[in-house]
Length: 115
Image (tube, rainbow, N blue to C red; front, side, top):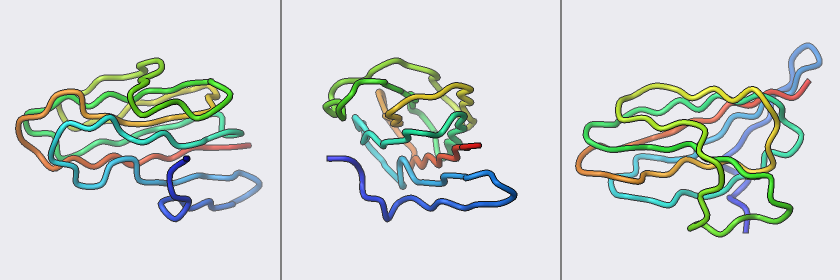
């Protein structure tokens, strides 16, 4: 089942749709993350904060159905300090996962653009 749509908001300005959402919200443990359907959006950025001692990976997939949480698709970025990952192409699914964790309360925010 895809993640709750209440975690996402779509804005429209000057003919451009912008998807904003929360991929991780104050997570303080390892986590497989949750896949989000981002069909139709062509460019994304994921901002991650709260990393103290942890590794956060941003993953994507083009599988026709939602991948299992333990399926990590294609890794597009790996962070061990606060930062962002930019993806300039279209994917069907996106998630952020915490592959290693010792300390930190980690959040990840998604913004995607559809022209």
